[in-house]
Image (cartoon, rainbow, N blue to C red):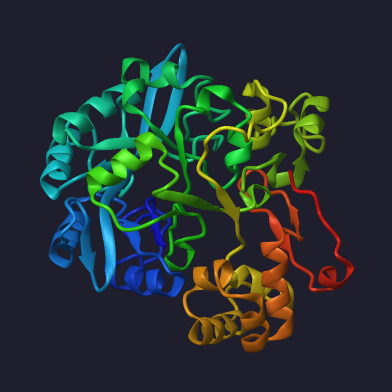
Amino acid sequence: MYIADLHIHSRYSRATSKNMDIEHLCQWAKNKGISLLGTGDITHPLWIAELKKWLKESNRQGIYTFNGIDFILTGEVNNIFPKDKAIRKIHNIVFFSSFEGAERFNRSLEKFAELLIDGRPILQIDARTLVKIVREADPEGFIIPAHIWTPHFSLFGANSGFDRIEDCFEEETRNIFALETGLSSDPPMNWLLSHLDFYTLVSNSDAHSPQKIGREANVFYKPFSFMELKDILKTGDKNRFLFTIEYFPEEGKYHFDGHRLCKVRLSPSEAIKNKLLCPVCGKKVTVGVMHRITALADRKSPDEAKNRVPFKHLVPLDQIIASVYQKEVESSFTLQLYTQATTKLGAELKILLEVPEKDLFSNLPEELAKGIQLVREEKLIVIPGYDGEFGTVKIDPLLFENQVQQTLF
């Protein structure tokens, strides 16, 4: 397997760890079992200078390497623009086949933004124009709309997005062939909309710290060049694109509706019953991903008969440990047990996806082995996230004996 996380950030983006540098990213990619990382923040002059210093071109065009980890040149931009009497705020991921193409793109952006301010620059240009600028800078370059359902900054976001892809990208829609689902939705939720059948769904971590890379990712059959990746995404080739790694979408921080200040979490039906108002303070709630998908869906249930790229739900290993032992994810206990597990059995994603159960139970504490087994069988409880608050995962080894199945979607 060749596992790729195509959307991350560097330390030059706001609210990111100081350890989001090449060396720490490579170390955590090995811990996780990630083969390919998007560089993130390719528009930031200081970051691109570091990338050019550290990365070497591989024998696969458009793929770079450092210390055994592959990289592809990517970045996220924030398009803010007026359209149809509303202010739209859309995040998009840009992909470039070479540093030369990325630098031509950055020179074009200097007309619209001060690139040194943030690794994810704010561009006062519409999404259609962004596609044109990317293609002019690098004819092989492309964009993928990021976390397409997030309420505040996304293609279909309840607060500032659109109802149709064509309304956002107009004639450039023909150059959009993949969509990022985001942490708060998974493929079956997106399959409720028939007009998304024409797009390949990808999943990435959008990590702001090295420990978070790979929490969502894409699993391919073997390494590829830039143009091969582009072709895989255009065609949705299941022989080369094996599956996506997904959060349980309830765990995402915008899955349900709600109002964080009042600690109010609402299902879509509850929010509608309350006229989208917080029952505590009366202010408008943040409309979440599940509500938005339900509103735009033209199917009552996911259409799984199509020739689609499969998916697998996972919970990161440190979260499994924290839930099983009722510890904090950042605790020394969790880190110690995480390190012991990966030292004995290999990279995290190998443990979660591939290690046989008998080897889990012979090498790990019984409670942890049971916890991993429960996640594989999707026998867990997730209290949905809302309005910027992540959902809560509950993995109780006692469920292993009782065989209790919690329905998630």
